[in-house]
Amino acid sequence: MAATTDWHAHLAETAVPLDRERELLDVRELGPPDPLVETLETLPELADDAVLVQVNDRAPQHLYPKLDDRGYEYATVEADDAVVTGIWTPEG
Image 1 (cartoon, rainbow, N blue to C red):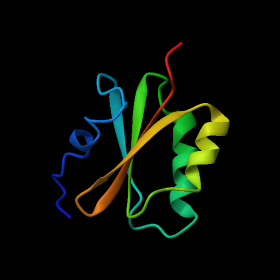
Image 2: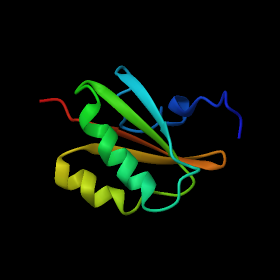
Image 3: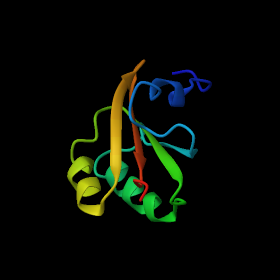
């Protein structure tokens, strides 16, 4: 895994608003349920106009319903040897 990988570029073909500030959260080295917990703890600290980019080693399937419950939007793509999920607060 190259440290210089542009994870944001992998989200370019999704609905992720790329004009917003982005914060990277790499949870590939964490075992369950830590990626879910780390992501849910980071989201409230994120600015409303920012996107959290979670890099994981698998699709965060248990995270999706929690994001839905909290009103976040998200998009996931497979990129190289990781799964990248952009998470953001919808405008409005």
